[in-house]
Image (cartoon, rainbow, N blue to C red; front, side, top):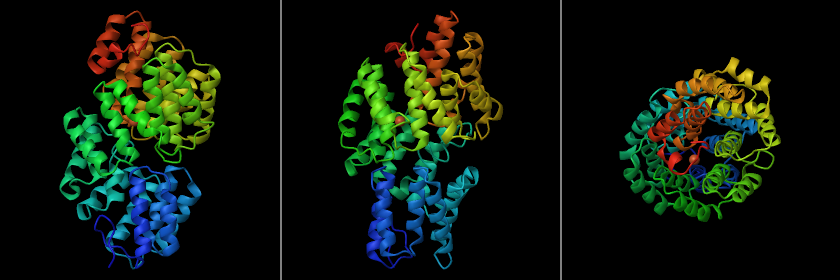
Length: 424
Ligand SMILES: [Fe+2]
């Protein structure tokens, strides 16, 4: 019987299909380009290879190709009968994820990895800041992220994907030395993984090594195809560091060529959050942003995220709606915020509305409420700096400059050192 690269037995009898599947998995885990091509090659060699259909469905979900997601999932389910317990559980668990049943999917992943810990495409679902734990909305989700990932250590050893994800979980809770050792191991084993390079960038950010980080990521990024699913977000890091270094020309260039909703082919969640975050961080630093820019992001949010539910998207949409003057869309988010962190979405959206109205004290109150556990909305510390900075900006505009400085001294001293919020 054939096995995959992680030692799991496979139903396919075609070695060609197996090799192409392994390549698809490797590329998916590294956010490399041509993931679909690899899974399609596996299916050309063996059309009844259910897990290759599942792999393709996962990639299509990243790219918001809903029709392809449904078709591939349906085909995998048709093929499930007669497969091993592991493969059937793999299909069932992925089905929950693809159909948006996030809490049930999280529970199913925990159960599945107990039995088959090296089923990497399932184990992966609960890793990273955009995963099922990251977006769980649960208090203490960063600690749970680290606990979950750490529990996998004895099964994955020095594996590059695992070491990178362990590093991310560690650096998000401040274990920077351990994270460095792990991310170096990961990059040595597979320098092509965009996730690993991205996590290395986060480590530079947390260590306040901004110029080194910008140098490192720019060098890595120049060979990264825009077809890779993380291209948009890696570009955001380059744009953000360019902004913080005072290189506005570069920031606009990166935004216009790689991130803006009009041109980016990235996953909609990245397109919305990266574009909105970069513009707002620029405004907080004192850069003038034309309203037209905000309108395009607001329109994109309305088109791609018409229903609330994913707090991380909804909060970034709220910023764009507030700044573009789309009160109707902003009020819709405030009134209909749903999902496991819907309470926080609503609080933050009210904060951005008050900020837009110049009600600085009221806005600061909303942000103060949210900063206690804003990790619940998901995303990385670097991304959620936006909220701390919003609080500081409102306090400063309310004439409470010292209070604003104290907040940032505690949460993000780099913001003071680098003057990332104007008026302090
Ligand atoms: Fe990031």
